[in-house]
Image (cartoon, rainbow, N blue to C red; front, side):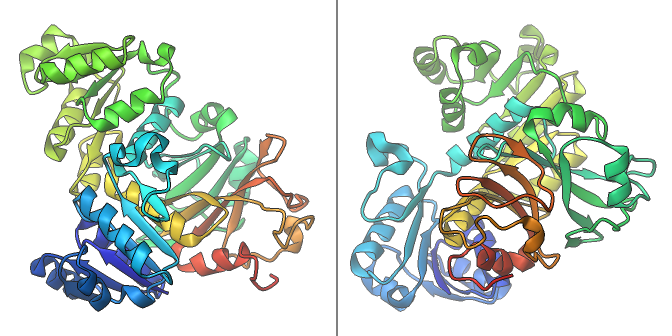
Length: 457
């Protein structure tokens, strides 16, 4: 598979690294010779220096015989126009994917609107907003992912010296700790693998845990202390587009527990007008007197989503120090801050880059995948897969399908709306939504498993 990526910035490089690990051919097209040189030096790829809106440069980059073209430059206009040109001039390209922040380009239809023949539109800020909203709904923070269709929650936990998992096999853990949950992946000294029932969990391991959303609080309390019953008072710092997307997803009751803080009076007035039930404070979060006057330390959660990564990290960390129970920081440009955030006692750091790459990867993987989330630096992937009527295992029991230790069916939401952890007696049925976990190196096995032309397992 050949993929041409417009934009050799942070998103382009992370996506390319992911694709190259899958043995795909990657070609960059970027206007900066410095970025092109850096991409070639870091990755096993080709790079062409030039404009993504220049037809001759598109040909030089090899768009004519590409399977997919992805535009992730910092310019919405470039992403929109370049993908539109590819769709019009190179009909053999199967997929065109554009990252676009300003949804005004798309009209009233939003992301579902077909425009210029582009296959898929990804809005990075809307992806980040959805992740933050999921945290507010579930109360799970560290490495949190929410799968709305299957109705399961995933998070990670580091195993301590005297933790409930330490020194025990997965089979023993299942006996001792009841509930609907699965451990689909373990990271041990940098290596990620899919565990079996006799795998012994060791001190220092990081384990991924998938839990049924209906009973997530009860189950998680038995193995961790990162669950909050209710976040009654929430402060959002930054009247950005992400804040707007978040509030649009909330009802009037949910908005009543939110306070928005922004230093711009004009921005505050706009949010007051658009969201009448929202409390809006006009002030500078860098002013210590403002924290005291508005008693910010009494809030249950503070979410820093300004346009400045450093400010978000500082605000989220300082909030914890003065008594705020939980904090979230948005990371827009520098993913190196993700590890720093944990050291600074920040409960969750949301990376726009990671959210964008996950969504683009979902589209590249093909039909049937409703969402894809990766953790452990992309080494463990979890898919929501919709079972279609032509799925070749319809009616077959899970015990009759060999997953070869390369994948785990971690959860099922039936067509009737019931979600459960499947055992060997589960029979695949059209309309079901499956939660499938696999290490990144086994992505091709999973893709073949759910393709219409794959080999019988």
